[in-house]
Image 1 (cartoon, rainbow, N blue to C red):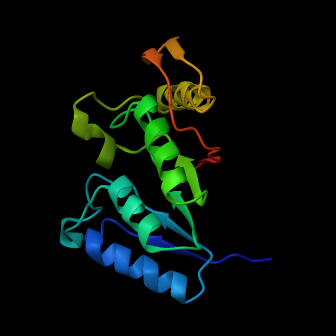
Image 2: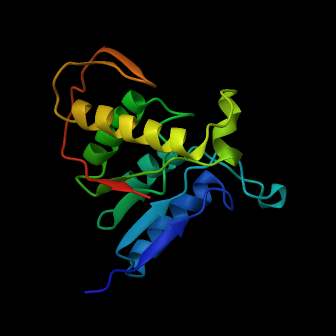
Length: 169
């Protein structure tokens, strides 16, 4: 069976419009919706960049059937992996199990904003692999402490832990 999806492009529309588009897409029969996670629009003329996770929370509340995806979140620069795990677990609960966490190694346009420089491709991929390990550990609901090559987690535990599918983009 073929599934059809709708892209909620945060760089092209404001948050209220994105929620309205998501509801409309669900009514028109789309099977899933993906939400781009950008700090900045690709072009200044696009003029929008609302916080993707906030938009996804509003979309989860406003829709009933469509699956939802982050498209894609970089858990290595703007967001720490522990925060991504908590966001994903919360969104999975709010969406009644319709959320899939889409992860990737990022790109300079959006990740440079925290002032950490722009790592090489290999380093970004290594950081992503470590971040995914941390996220999966936190999804167990157990207490996690981590001292890795790139990240530290000090006695963290997710208290609300649904099963969250993870996709790599």
